[in-house]
Length: 80
Image (cartoon, rainbow, N blue to C red; front, side, top):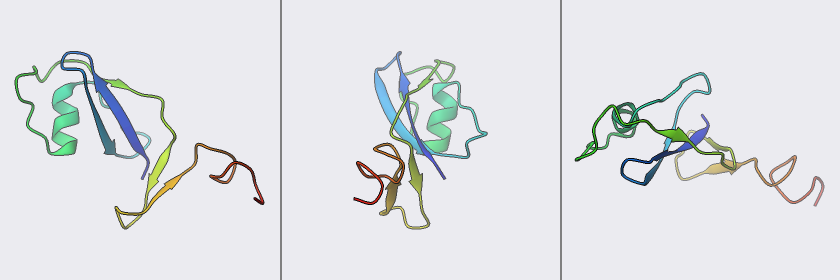
């Protein structure tokens, strides 16, 4: 599953979560629910913005992330 970074302008926090590409998060409350975070003092309805990132993919093991942002095969060039 891909990972995404979301920024909340209301509290200036960035939270990384993984979810299906078809899923859309619009509020701090939705983001906190998915990330199992306490919303704290930020109102649940505060908007969040998905950040442009490197496009990581979550494997079955959370300690192994595969990056696809540096080139066509995740390196600085295919065949390197």
